[in-house]
Length: 238
Image (tube, rainbow, N blue to C red):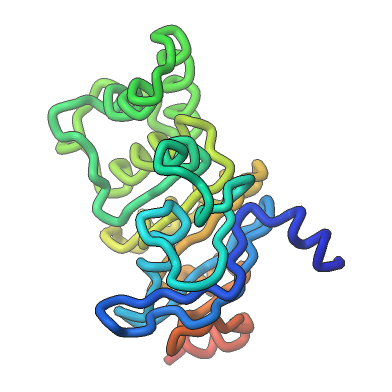
């Protein structure tokens, strides 16, 4: 594949990106491509810059140097008014769920569609669709406190899928879950990826990376390193 073809298939691209936080160089001249339909793990020690990496993608942080592109958007050149449209391209899943406790499963997912101005008819149809996709059709009237951790994370994923994003960003989506629930969430993310959505997942769980092998990159001293699967397997055995 030529560099031009690689650029054409990239839904996220970093070119010479540097980020400084409190006078510390967190990312240093980083180049990165997430291609359409690709699944990539992002690993690294606490404080290595993983959160900054994700914040660059949804434009909570701007680079000190370099260029970030997400789909058709050049994030350094876009206006603040365009940011909500950028974020509709992204389905974002956090470790701590961030569900509205006083709203049902249905209402939590519907809320993501209400704030983007969709019609009531479309909202009803789409919520039913995404709850079916994540296996929660029978839980639509329950509240977050009535669900297991794995079920709550499925609601978060359904909410992230609601606006039909091109890219899923998953920030430690299994961090608060037991091994069985973690594997179930990974299988769901794998299904989503198999439908053609690009997935970028931050994780510390090497067992999952070994069990569900995909391209793995590590942030180390401000640089990105591709990690061979053999090294992941060796690390998981320690």
